[in-house]
Image (cartoon, rainbow, N blue to C red; front, side, top):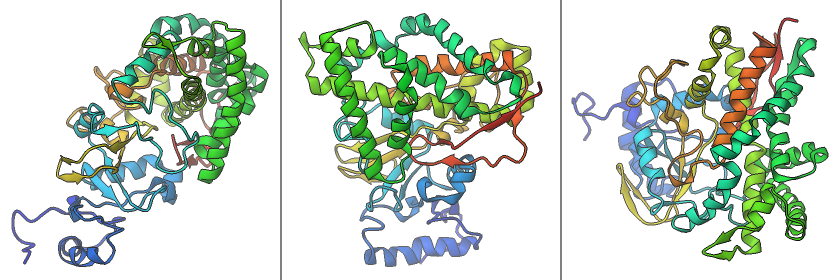
Length: 444
C-alpha cells in the first residue's frame, strides 16, 4: 500500500494525468498510483502496456481552445507540470498516442541520435502534405549528408550575403507602402510578402503568382483537414513538376536549376528526388519565416521598452532576434523510433512517435539563467527553433537575415508601435503555429 506521508512518496508534478484540475494532492496521487493501474488494462489503447502511469500527461495543442488564445501559457503549463519526457494518449493524427520531450538535454540527445530517432519514415503522422519523402529532411545519414550538400550553394552564408541588398530593398518598399497610414495588418503587410517574394525570386518562379503560392502552402500547413492539406500539397507539386521540366530544358542560376543539375555519388539524382527537394524548398520557404516574423513582432508590439532598447542600440538586433526565438519557438520537431530503446525511464518501441517541445528547452533553467526573462544582451542563446542535430534547418541563414532586417528596417522607418486597441489576437495551432492576424498601429 502507498503511504502518502512517506518522504519518498512521488511528488504530484511527476504524475499529472490529463488536464490538471485543482484537486487535493493526495487524490491526485491516489488516482495516479492506485486507480489508474487497475483501470489501464480496460483501455490498453489509451495507455499502452509498458508506459509508466507517472509519465502520462495528455497534451494536444490542436484541440486545446486555450492554445488558440495564448499558446505560450499552455506550453508553460506543460513545462511546469509534465515530466521532461511524457506520453500523451491524446494526439491529433493518431489514436495510439505519442511521446513528448520538453527538456533541453533529452531533446539534444534525441536529435543527435538519428540511428534510433529517425525521420526516414516520415515526420508527419497523418496525411502529410506531400505523400513522398521530403528530402533531405526525411533522409537519415549517411545519405542525408549527400542530399543536404545540394542545398549548400542555395542557402550558404556566402550566398545569403549576396541576397542582403535585395532583402533590404523589398523590406523597405513594403514598409513604405503603409508608413503614412499609421496602421496595418502586419502579416499581410510584411510577414507574408517579404519571405515569399525572396523565395519566389530565389526559385525563379513568377512573382505575379506569389500570393497563389502562399495560399497553397498555408493550406498545406494550416488546412482544417488532412485531406485538404494533402490536396494542396499535390496541387503544388503538379505545378512544380512543370517548372522542373522547363529547367531541364532551359537551366539558369536559380534554386530549381541548381537542384536539377545536382549529382550524388557522381551521378545525376533521380527525377523523383529532384521533385522532393524542390518541394521541400517551396513549402519550408513560404511558411517558416512568416510565422517567425509574426511572433517576433507580436512580442515587440507588447513590450515597448524592448523597442526603445533596440532603437537606441540597433547593434542588439541580431542577438534580440535569437533571444526571442529562444523564448518563443513556434516549430516542433518529430521523430519515429527505429529500434527499441530504454530512454530516460521509458521503454520506447519501434514505431513510437516522439515530438519535441522547443519551448521547454528554451526555458530550461539548467541551460539558461533566469530563463523566463527575455534579455537582449544574453551572452549565449542556444535554441531549437531551427531544429538540431543533422537535420538543423538548411535555410536558417536566410531566415535569420530576413528576421533581422525586418526588425531593423521597421524600427528605423516606423519607430515605436503597438497592437491596435481592442484587437483580439488568435493563433492557428496546426503545424508551425502562427498568428491569424497582427493589427499594429503607430504615430504618424
